Amino acid sequence: MAKHNRHIRGKTEEIDVPINGRRAVDAGDLMFLDTQDGAGGLGESVTYTGIPFDLGQKANDASAALVVLNLAYTNFLGIAMETSPVGVTEFISIATAGVFRMPLTDLTGVTIGSKVCIASPATAVNLSADTVAGESSVGASSAYLGWVTKSGASSQTYVEFELQTRSNRTFNVNTTV
Amino acid sequence: MANTQRLVADRTWKPKTILLGFTSGVTVELGDLIFLDDADDLRNDGNSTATNLGYPFEYFRLSGASLALNKIGVKDYFIGIAMDDKDGISGGTNKNLTVGTDGKFYMGLKPNKTVRVNNMYGASGTTAASNLKNQLIMKVTETTTALGYFLESKSYAQSAKINIRNKQHKI
Image (cartoon, rainbow over all chains, first blue to last red):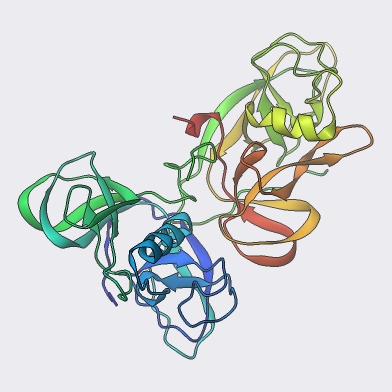
C-alpha cells in the first residue's frame, strides 16, 4: 500500500480502469490487469479489473514465482493515481507514462538508461505494489517497468524512472512481450 | 463516413501531429485512418507508384489480396488519423493536412466486441471488395495486424478509446 504521489514529471497519459470493490487500491500502487482465473488472489474467476501488485496471487514455490511475475509484467497497466476503498466498485485513473519516483526494494546504485523491474517475490509472499528493483539489485527480475532517468551512487533508497507500459509510446505492438 | 472528430481531449495526454500531403483527387474526412504511400503497388490492386503522400485506408489494395492480407499489409504503412478534411478535386494541387500520430482517440468498431484495456485493434473492412474501412477498427489478437491498443474496457463496444502505434513508434 502506497498512498503517495509518485509522479515527478511528464504527461501521465491516464486511462480509466475498473476496480473491483473487493480490493483496496492506494494512489501510487503498481497495477496490473486481471486477465485470468485466480490472478486476482481471491480465487475468483477472471474479472478484467485493475489489481495492485500486492493483492495478486501468491507464489508458493520458485516456479510459481515466475508465473506470478510474468502475469504482472505482461498485464502491467501503470501506476494508480487515485485511491479506491474496499466496498466501492468504480473506475480510477492509472498513469501509463511519465517519470515516477519509487522506493527500491534493496539499496543499490542506479544509472541512467538501466532498467527498473518488478521486485522478485519471496515464496508465499505477494509482489510489492510500492517498491521496485534496480536492474542489478539483489532479487531483481527481468520483468521491466521502465528506465532509470537519474543516476545515483550506491545505496540509493529511491529511483526515478520513466514508465514503460503497453499503452505508452515506449512500447510497440511489434515488440515481443 | 462523415467527418468525425476522433481526438479525445485529455489533459494527461499530449497529442502529436504532422503535416502530411494528400493528392488533389482524394477526398479525406476528419477521423479517417491514414496510411503513407511510400512504396510501390500499395493501391489500385497492386498497380501504383509510391507518391509519399497520405491516403485513407480504403485506398489500400495490394495485388489480388484478400481482406485479411490487406489488414496485415496496411500495418507497416499506417501513419495516423486525419485531423482535417478536404474534397477530392480532379486536376487540382496537392494539399497538406494535419494527421494525428499520437494521443488518445475514439473510434468505431466493426464488428461490435467486448474489449479490455491493452487489447489490440487493427483495420476493419468489407469482405466482398476486400476494402478497408476509413473510420472503423476491429479487435485483433495477432500483432501482425495490430495498429495499437484499446485504452478502456467496454462490453459489446460500438466505439472505444485507442492509442496509435505507427511507423514512428517502431524503434
